[in-house]
Length: 364
Image 1: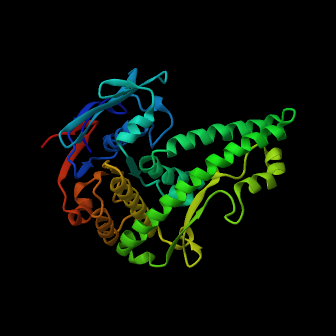
Image 2: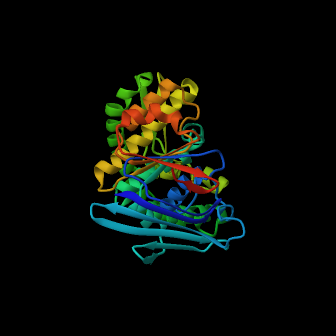
């Protein structure tokens, strides 16, 4: 199910623009500030209901305009599914799927799995555990029907527990004991889904992707559930209760989960060069998309902003080899289209070029 149509109105410096992407590789090129990254941002917004560049929606709306609008069309075989999202200066959001209003961004996200790689995506390695949990849970959201409901339910219980820890009402210890039973029940289900997903992820990643990355032959992936593997979560909550009460928040649970990569016991952040980390990042994103596509009937979308950034010619060839394993619809932004020829040539897929200048599409 590829994105076959995209139209924007009043989105950053783009007042009105329409593109008809191909199912394969879409190259968006132009000078800095031309609007090429805004096109990628709009696709991401159409799936996630938020930007990968800023949390401030007002800065996305074209100056002196009241709202932005994004329309898309997902095509699957002979079906065409129109989708859309708009946001006003006051923050009102309108979602539409097949002409019908929707209240949940998750419905858009389910239709269109989108991942993005930007020059800032190194936060997956150098950022906190939250970035890595987001990556992991994106895959689970698409391949496990129960995950989203479990995660929402767990967060409600977590908020209740933290509120009790902060306010400390009368008999709050007994109240927390009551909530802990539900906390543990939901946490164990979430953890089991994560462990099963990571097992499948590792198999795809190490069997297929690492064969392309000769730099990472001894790579190891480690998962931390958010509490010690040698103890139950119920015991961990009990043992950490006094500390949690002092701090006013819950220190153990799936909301603290993390995963990491290492080589010979040393973290990749301290071992790999920037180019090697970039290759590892591409391999992770491609593996995630491949899993989503193999376990669902969805076609994923991969957005790559400023692809040539920090990539030498040899690294570009390896990126091309990695992406050749990917059946996702791909959108790549670059200043000069010729600078990524080493990437797209090994992929042997349908290719479309879009030249953007001052927020407009330049036709040849």
